[in-house]
Length: 322
Image 1 (tube, rainbow, N blue to C red):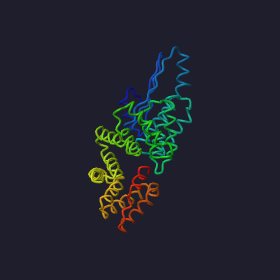
Image 2 (cartoon, rainbow, N blue to C red):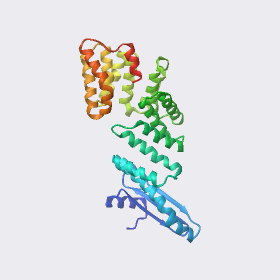
Image 3 (spheres, helix red, strand yellow):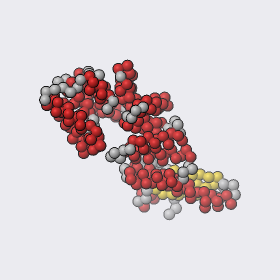
Image 4 (cartoon, one colour):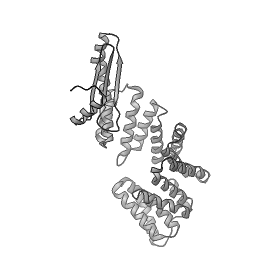
């Protein structure tokens, strides 16, 4: 089949049920090869080489081009599988790309970046591996904003000794490079909130900035504000943010945050319902998180049923480091 442009390539790829189509042209002065994926939003990949004579043309077509095309084909295939949420297939393609062209230089950063994304989407992600993959990408491109942001979030989630400082450094660098990155403002706010009273005003400013920059992330930001005011022992201010977070996304961690707020307000029955709802969601959606959080939440439920409030100043402080 003759293909002469991108539109024809995409049409042929869809008709054939292929993940992508490789097509191109050459003459005495150049070689052009294009990989056109069938899956949005994956972009086409192009190899363009200028050649000086017939011998160089032959060497390019028969030796250099096949290796480069295999590399690009594997990277494109990984992206197509990732876009379709076929994570096992995507991981295999990216690992094969890594093995087939370890000398690919800075372009390897996209492979490491996707491998980090895939690992982070697993039911029980290995955060050490997520950080390692993003670090490999950043070693190739220190200004790779997405990798900085994702590594900072992984440090925050892992929360090992020293991780908060590492996360803060990554996220401040993201904001320096891209001031309008809402997720960086949100995650930096979460870090500063853990630092103590002296940095809570800056944390609040970052939460508000995140909400302004990305209203679509309102559930996450409102939950962060709910948690912020709850741990500051200001449940009256916290509650509207909790309610809004749950209204926007009832499947998130907001029930846990609101449970703390209800307990601080003395609304024991509502607190018990929220903690139970939070645990029910985790039990099926994230068993590893359930194992982590259920012991404390079950103790809280037991204490509340006994007429006790488990949220003293020490407990609220401990929750900042949870």
